[in-house]
Amino acid sequence: MTDKVRFHFDPLCPWAWQSSKWIREVTRVRDVEVEWALFSLQLINADKEGGDPLADVHVKGTPALRTLVLVQREAGSQGVGRVYEAIGNRVHEGGEELSPDAVKKALDDAGFDPGLVDRALSDPSTMDEVRRQHTEAVETAGAFGVPTLVFASGRGIFGPVIARPPGGEASGELYDHVRALAELDGFFELKRERDRRPGQ
Image (cartoon, rainbow, N blue to C red):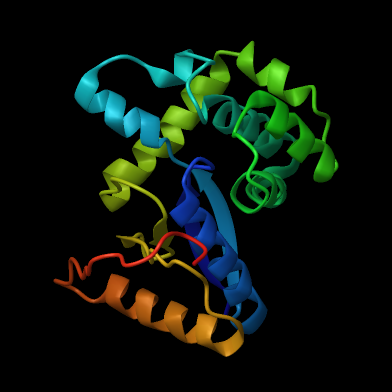
């Protein structure tokens, strides 16, 4: 039976990017279906500081998130996954700035109309949808950052935060452990200090 997991990400986050590479590898070695869902790190900080970063098109990450809403409407979760991968390849692998221009190029890389960026930024409903998915993660899984995984049971967990994804069966084994911890009643947290940067 296919295991379904919702993967909340912000394309701005290099740690979520590494975990997204891991979950893609998991789908090659486990019967797992990923639903790609949005989360705004800027919105979490705005909740503390005030203001609405989703309304400000100059806030880093906002154009990408709002554009992914239109991708989702056109091509569903798998379309979001393709564009997120293209953004990550340019930004986190290629060193480009997460700018509207980079998002346009990523859309083209993934076979979508680059004009979606301008359409998304002129459509206020894209703000509402980013906020809805973000709030769903916060309220149903206690999300405070990314990556956040939400399993079919409704249980969610922050992480795994990994510098570099393991390959092959090791990715599957890590998934098994993460899922088991997420489903364990009364389990809340494990943490250790980071000793390297994403990708190292």
